Image (cartoon, rainbow, N blue to C red; front, side, top):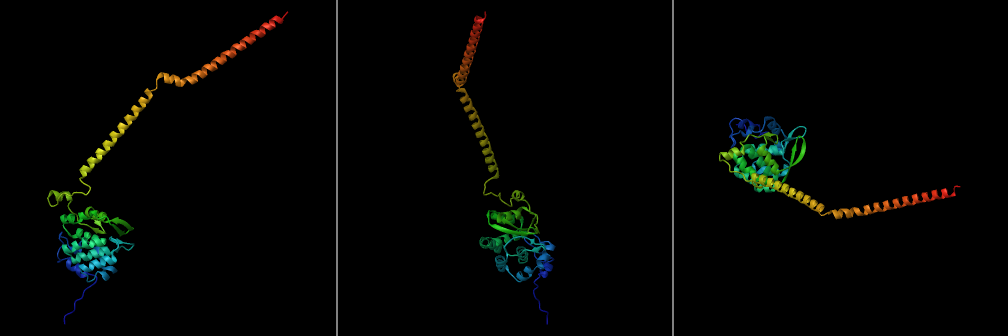
Length: 285
């Protein structure tokens, strides 16, 4: 009687078989070795992976995301535990869902469950070719929904468009080293991608408009300064010499009055002195 076979919840058989003879991902990488070995070991030994990721299919992934995934990230905490997000991403590497299933994750499911969309985007970045990654991920740069991110330093707030931008530009996301893609300019030169049109418009046109606005503000400011100087000159020119003399006349009249009083008092004093002298002479024998 042959020995009965059974599944193992730690998925070590998947790692051993796929590491040597399993099918490759569309980008030519081995799905079992895309994640680093220390991260894989933490995942297969984690309680969540052994309890929730055993004998699941593509439909069960949706239920696991809705029930257990409330943040994105790689490993967290003092003991660097793998997040449910990373454990399910590793399970997707084993299942290798088709493009139609991934499209359902992104569109219909992603509109209701944002973490399901984030998981699908992360998986596409790990397994698809560079031109397909740009085509699929770039439309979701317009998704502004909030996401929680948990890592070694605690929990932080991010957004879906920031997460997508990290997947397109950074080399390491969610404790995973991303394979190096060719830049978008190179793919456009090879005619593998069309030139991307930003929702904000052409960047060169935006820079030209900003420069024109700055120049217009500078010219407007200079005109205002020149107009202010002209108004001051005109205000000064309206003051005639007569008006200036009139403005100074009260002070001059006051000075003249004071001078006349002083001369009159001096003349009275000299007259009284001469009179007293004449009286003294007449009294003398």
